[in-house]
Amino acid sequence: MQPGRAPKTRCFLTYKKLEPMTAEGIKKRGGARPGAGQPQKLETRPPFATALEYAMAVINDNNAAVRRRDAMAMHVLRHIEAPTTKEPTGKHAERREAAIIAADRFEVPAPPPRITVQ
Image (cartoon, rainbow, N blue to C red; front, side, top):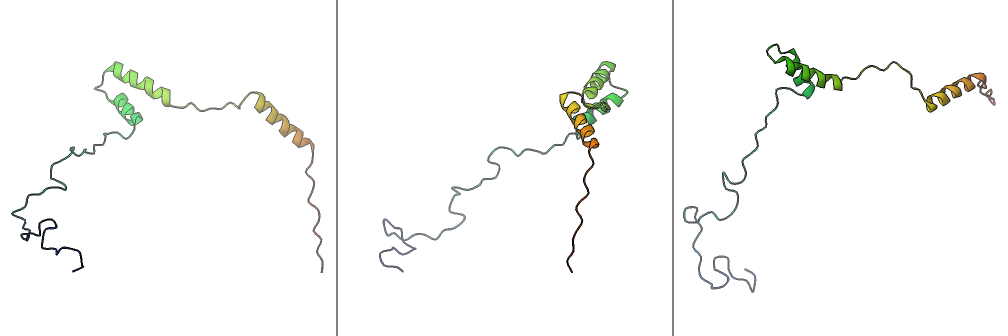
């Protein structure tokens, strides 16, 4: 025991002897309580991974209304990219083509020969 400190079995203020702690005689005062707090969120996955898959399933469903299938087809068509076959046009494309033509006029000089000393 250190000087100036009360023994562990006595209360600090009254020096009254403490009873041994038992699990039956003491109520829980803090900590986690079962069932407390907000309910846990259940992880639910949609049956389709993407909106496009859902739209395609509606389009292919023969039991769906015709208007609904048409509306889904319109939404799908907005997201499908058309292949681009045209070359880019404009000021930058013209300058790029002119630079390629100008570069073809000149020959690239051969690298200088290597001189080896024996």
